[in-house]
Length: 400
Image (cartoon, helix red, strand yellow):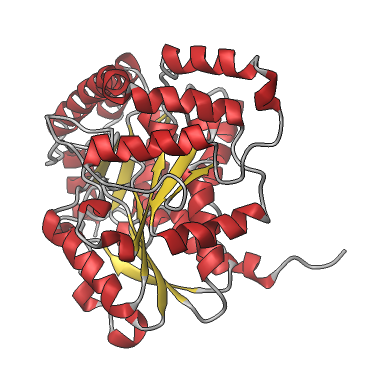
């Protein structure tokens, strides 16, 4: 047998595949697992989208190969949604493209722009695909730290000029996975100006734009004047409408970036199933209506878990976007050690922060993808087993 590409050897184990393995191992031992790991919503897709899918899949015209870039109706709907939601104008023909989920779009964009020696600027902590797919393409990921002292916003001025001049892509993601941080107008403007100066394509991964609370409304980077010159933005229906398994999203923005992405897709996949595009269009047309109740549920879960962690000694503030909580581990513990402790003593699965990059060390992520009863049970298990911030911090501090 031939050997696989050397680039495969550069990849760490994929974080979420490792979590799935740990869950399977624990369940095989009879452990009642509460998984707060992968960001896979436990709630169903809204019924109007399901009903539209039923109708669409019964239409034989959807059974043929889809349009590579997305159906005209879907692209028009995405374009109209950008105008209604963000007051951003994108051409449905040249500046809009359907994706088989944002993950696919991110990977294919990296492939379109990266060859050996090229630099891709990747946030840390950040979605692992940014760095991992850069490695698969033979590129060089450069870590852009997202630090608590900067409210998890990038310090682009700290990137050395020689690195910036070699960079092809900059990935940013706000509202942010895993930290829940939100963008500021100043940061968006700085990012656009930075990419313009160094001829970099900015890819804004806006997967969590509609998952917000307390009156907050997430912005589009394309709302910055002139952003389309250097920016492409990707949206996902996965978290917006609990459609992770449907695999549908879209990219909008810079026409050259859309064209390059389309060239890769034309030679790699055959586009998103037309019936799914039709169903997703219903989601866009009824977006505020369909996300309102979902966000109310996630908001209650957030409040419940924040209160529970505070009672156990954690000093944390509730996030206003995403369904992720970015929580510090107790003093003296590593991220992996704490995640292992939660699994072994409490049957709770969370990803360790260092799985999102070196700057994630010292944290763990909670995905609020379990109902309120299970979240209460998770908190009770932690308290019953002494897995509280105060007890563990005092214990580890004394043992150092």
